[in-house]
Amino acid sequence: MRVYGVIMAGGGGTRFWPLSRRQLPKQFLSVTGRDALINETFDRLAEVAPPENIFVVTGTAYAQKAMDIMNGRIGSERILEEPQARGTAACIGYAAMELLHKYGDGVMCIMPSDHYIEDEAGYCRVLRRAVELAAERDALVTVGIKPQYPATGYGYIRSSAVMGTDGRPEDYRKIEEFVEKPPRIVAQEYLSLGGYAWNSGMFVWKASVILDCYRRLLPDIYEYLSEISRAFGKPEEKEVLGRVYPKIPRNTIDYGIMERAEGVLMLEGDFGWNDVGSLDALALFGEADAHGNVCMGESLMIDTGRTISYSSGRLIAAVGVEDLMIVETPDSILVCPKNRAQDVKKVVEELQAKGYEKYL
Image (cartoon, rainbow, N blue to C red):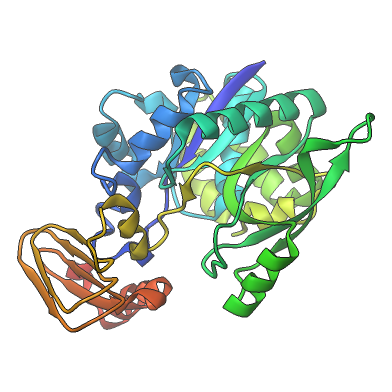
């Protein structure tokens, strides 16, 4: 059976401001210092799915940017353009419909474009096993990350063991519940109880199987996607997509499908995963000094500890502070406590409210 890769690359990366901007969102940045995040995602996925079977779903405004930054990895025919962002349910359903009708059924490996993976060999092992489960059992499979600390910025998955015919637990687990981002005290309880994993947002299933879930669980979205699919390969395809897609109700794959489908399976991953969701993730990509400071670019840290500094050109000097993030770009400077990293998106919201478009 065919194996497809689908990279979701439509996000705005608001919690990564001021590095992430409308014209160059996080997935197109070289955050790790090696390559753009979307290219690292493609190269990892190409170890599991043939490169010619990997597709990118992104907004129309980012389609050319994706082609330019991916530098020959992908052609325009494998970039699926969303005329308007309508959530992950629309994004994934559109990709499934496109693959099934234009290329034939197969197992889809759906990956966000902006994750960091330390152990890429371990990642590939888990993903190949997920492909096997999806192909053999017609199952919806997700990857849960073994939690390393009581994170409040991630959703959680509660799962239970599945016993094999020999009386021993299988290598996959049955999902019991998806849990929203919890307060710290609840996250600590999850770690002590066990049976909880971070929700990675990685999904593996057959295109035909997930579309049947849409038909049963999200019939309104399914009807819009079907209307789009009836125009595939016809002169009016682009016009129909542009007219119909914005009508699709906003929803996420978690709410719309995963929390309602029966028998969803999870494989646990322990391969050094981070969703690079906020600026505190920068600490992963630099070496800490004796005081726990991680500095990228020119910096001077005096009596300062556990601080992240990122300079695009100017010197950052800090005296007598702790647990801060200091990020300098040519037009903006952000100073924020590390424990408020999730709130950086509020800066973007305030800039929008005040009409400061040049900083967005």
